Amino acid sequence: MNKVVFDASAILAIVLGERGTEKLTPEILATAVASTVNLAEVQTKLVRAGHPPEMAWEDALAWISEVEPYTAEQAKIAGTLVLQTQDRGLSLGDRSCLALAIALGAPVYTTEQIWRNLNVGIPIHVLR
Image (tube, rainbow, N blue to C red; front, side, top):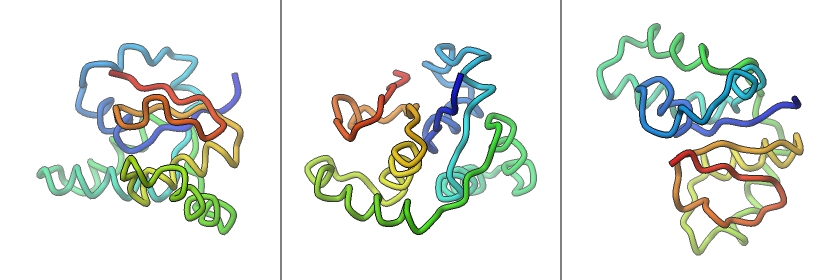
């Protein structure tokens, strides 16, 4: 299996044991990657919720096989995606995740319902 991309909400759902994560098979988990932008978002949310910073970071990294740096190409894609996604109000973090998936030609996993039926050229799997 090729790479799959997890957005911050998917990683948080796994870390917090939320509904929908049972859909993530060992094969999917073994190929999951995340953008540094989305990892910063996960770290922020876990630390704000009271998790010790080092534990929060370890928990976030435990569920992905590779950290992908945010590139100039991804920044361009994310900025351009605003035209296709403005009616849904996607954040820069959301668009950065999609940009990574587009750059890799990989499916993306999220818990964000607003991504359902979003057509940006890659498969989007909404976990719940």
